[in-house]
Amino acid sequence: MGPSRLHLAQGALAALALGAAVLLQGQAPAASASSDNLTADRVENLRLGGDGVAQRRHMWTIFADMVSDEEPDFVHWQGESGVFGAEAAKRPSGIQGFQRPKSIGGDPHLIGAPIIAYNLFNPAAFAHIRAQGLYRKATLDRLQLTGGTGSVPPFPAAAIVIKTAWWPVAPEGLTAMPVWDPELNPPDPTGNPYLGWARVVAVDPTNISQGKTAAVQFVGRSFPGARRVQLEAFHHVAVDAAMAKQLAGDPESNRTAIIALGRPIAVNDQLALVGINVMTHEQQDWVWGAFWWHDRPEVGPFAADRPSTLPGPWRNYLMQAAFDAKTPRASDAGAHICFNPWLEARFPDGGQGGGTVSNCLSCHQRASYPAAPFLPVTRGAPNLREDPALAPDRLRTSFLWSLTLHAQRD
Ligand code: HEC
Image 1 (cartoon, rainbow, N blue to C red):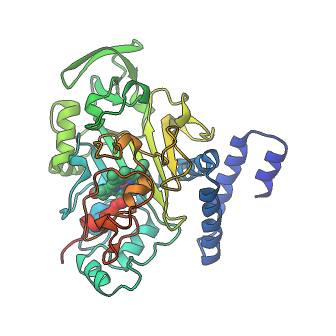
Image 2 (image 1 turned 180 degrees about the vertical axis):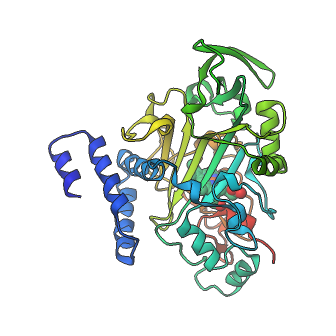
Image 3 (image 1 turned 60 degrees about the horizontal axis):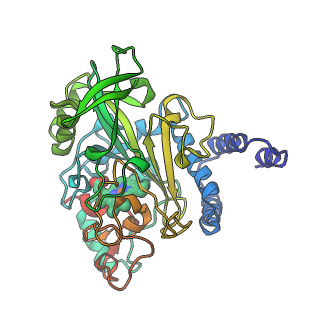
């Protein structure tokens, strides 16, 4: 950490120090028990300190680490079918391997509006789930009956799981895409799904339109002055034949395509990455981050502290971070808020507020087996006495809802 301290001491830009931290992390040797402990201590101090800026810098570093190579790391991570399938790692990795295993429990995306969403597990998370058999209901049943700790075996500190959200874009013409502007979308008690967001942009993959704005329609509404943006402003992936088949067979993805394109997904369509939810096991309760695309990525509190080293389209994502269910306090003086507009804004207000005041930890700490409903949104500390999801006879699944919802019968 010598060089980064020096920069700080000289009053150099914090961004430089952050760049050095990224470099150091990139050179770190494979995780060992003692480096795991060091990370855990540092991250626990960040949590206890409750300094939102320091927490944001840490989350940006995680992001930069993940996306700064030629390809983002998660291109090589296993998806839901690889993790929960009968035989490991038979699918292509990344979104290219999209395949939804049969789900036992509920699906959060059936609330408000559908989105093409896919969970990806880094090698450390994947190896742990497979080695411990956590993808099988039989294992969870056994642990629930016999496991003394009431929890699945702890994940390694290096484990990272992400939920990616994608918007389909036609290869030609203009595709309308909603954009989340908090000030234009006041909290709605029935939820704030993207269908009702006040503004859209016009994604233009072939630059057919020369103007700064273009006229587009979106679910029956006209937007005569939508800002035109190029596909290059997003991380994006072309749909091949295998993906088109899998996406067409997934009801939620298919419904997303009908909304965005007016037709099912086809080969040569593009998937633009609009959101990523990140959880890393640097502390027992994981560290949480939400990233989402915006056409004005330099503006506002969610743009703050972004490292200048982020390459290309990755500079266009905004961020919120959460290390704790309560702190630092939100601007309404209530418990800390951290949500992704694409994934959680749609959750309705069930008494403690809707998705726009939700917090990743507050919901994910309730992940237990057998699955309890993940709604309504809860805010702040867990209700250990009354929440059935937290009853002592249940098996806690280390904050992973997918284990309790998607573990497979043999
Ligand atoms: C009100 C509940 C709720 C909130 C709030 C919530 N999630 Fe989730 N999340 C879920 C459910 C349910 C799933 C599992 C469904 C699936 O992916 O198939 C899930 C899945 C995930 C996954 C895939 C791994 C897993 O748990 O199975 C990640 C990563 C994730 N969420 C991150 C986040 C982040 C980051 C935030 C905050 C920005 C957040 N979530 C907020 C309910 C929630």
